[in-house]
Length: 344
Image 1 (cartoon, rainbow, N blue to C red):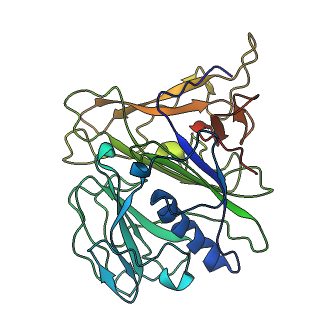
Image 2 (cartoon, rainbow, N blue to C red):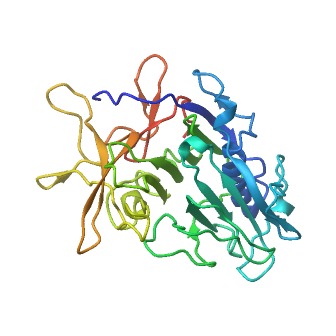
């Protein structure tokens, strides 16, 4: 594998067990709670990466929340620092349900994320991002912000906007989460069920680098879930990660086209997940994820995603470097900063 060299320090907590796998609903609630708790630096289970503890300043903070009974925008986390399934109420918008708004450290923007449990289907929730503050909200409807956007769509999110965040809630199984972040709070969050040999969900939030001075909205989010093939992080095709990477446009006045990341096709052969090791040196090829706004009639160069690469067909979960202490692992068709070896 050609060397994908990290530019930024990354901090990993991997192999984090789900707090409750007693029912399908609680498996799904564990996914949601772990995303919140890992962002807030509330998790001590699993394995800390060899780079050591992440800086305290990398933690996201709670702006407000609802547990379906009460709500606030005064910074109280009603989901609490200990998993409590009763605090995560999943129901359609307009009905009492849970949500939480989190804020990144200032160095990332700041960026805001509203996790909205706005569906009675427990595998479905809303993930609404903004670089503006959220306000309002009640026990029945999430808060809103100006300039919102969400993974997988290039229109303004609605109160009902949501996605299927996992399709696997197999009982009597071992589920684990894997998380890495920079000191700014930019992150990767992945989940897996042991014995499946793939990751089942991947969510990330990153600020693009090498952008032009007129690009005032560098933040990109990506989401993918899959339980077949190379799993979450599979790059090419209609229902894959490449199609789920989104941002607002460079002027923050609209939306960037879906799938702003490059696809890397050589002749008739796509690189991601397909190209074999190079015949000359037996290494897999890893290439940057360049970004472009392609909404007709305008196009704009948007830079690239930092410290993540599209790769060929190495084994999912494989380590880089393959000997010694790994700093990255293969999630689907990506080389991602993750220093703890995942059990897949």
